[in-house]
Length: 126
Image (cartoon, rainbow, N blue to C red):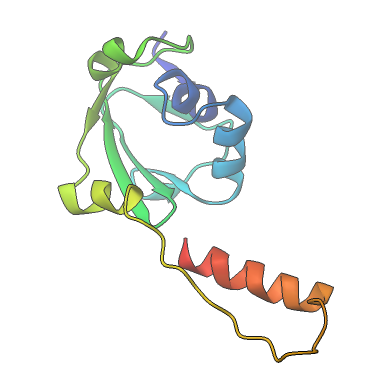
């Protein structure tokens, strides 16, 4: 086997917990192969560089070998080399900022529009 689907590979090397998460990331333009956006069916080969946007961090990996079977965490370094700078890795584990929104007393419960606005702001922070 010289190539495998990118969504299957990301799941196999434990970057995403499920294959559907990997597929959603590819569809959301959060995965790049050698600088070009990758759709879930794109084939990945040994020697290619992967850029994965996870939250506020951009993780960079080099593909050493391909596999379509999920493996134990101890075997992952044989298939994937982590090229991510230490500062980017730290962003994944950084505590999220707490945002406090003030509502006037007697304003009632937030509306759907208020909730969507709040969700949009939280997504922008990720």
